[in-house]
Image 1 (cartoon, rainbow over the protein chains, first blue to last red):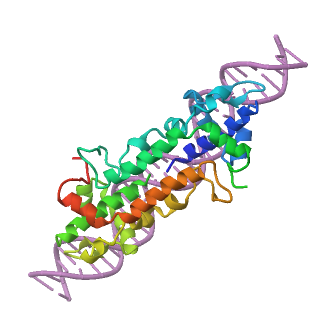
Image 2: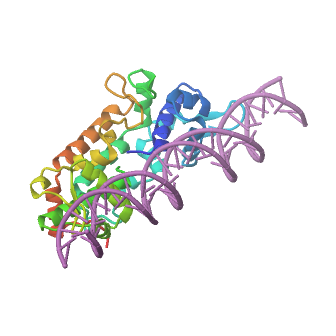
Image 3: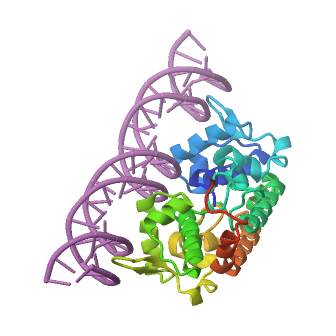
Length: 145
Length: 145
DNA sequence: TATAAATAGGATAAAAATATCCGAAATAAG
DNA sequence: CTTATTTCGGATATTTTTATCCTATTTATA
């Protein structure tokens, strides 16, 4: 569904959000340990999220990554996905045709459209706050063990 | 959503189904031209579909690929996807966790489950016959131009 | 100002997906 | 039986994705 980079990016964002609520900045090292992802690769993805203004980075001693508390509820999964994987998952043809629309549909165009619209709706209506809360209360997890 | 291989595989299967209805076997060359895909790569994918008993191949002169007319309506998109991409799209975690279920869910487990179940239902209820018919009647296409 | 700690970012490596090439094996038809 | 045609399958190449490494830059604090 998503690229590895995007999976890591979402998990990292949730972890950062959770810690930002608690007033803590986190480092790529801590993030990658807590979400079980390769550290340097995760750091690269964080850079992309910073550039897209989804998370903040603070350089230097006592620095790290954080999200402004005010913004956490406003950041939707769709923002993260778009920043990392682009919007192909929304607009792309299910069978890979370069142009596929009502005027020139692939054989599964309308059936796929329903699925994609459902996914889009879900990603656009799910925000980091609720997901971070599930981690905080321990009803959901960001790694296996 | 799907790999390139899977996209080609679905498009190829639809094209083969359409031609099988008309009693024609088709070659990888003709297939790749009509679905606009790399020929040798497409041929490899066809081999996989043959091994999974989704399509038939006939070697030698006047050979090619075909699907028994009786079987066309029974072949679902899910069969093709499973043969090429496996069932990760059904069972895999949206955030890439190795184990993610009701007992140990990722933060988007239930939301993703809905989407995936919808996708699964769609793939399992869509068969090659209806798709091939849309190509035959010209209301849908397997390539852009 | 010096130092330690931290992100930024370029260069590179490894792995996986995509794609090509070519000889072997099978088969229909002459 | 021979020949032409066609799929099969292994080897290889290319591209993209994933991952690592190392240095530069920034910044808080002593």
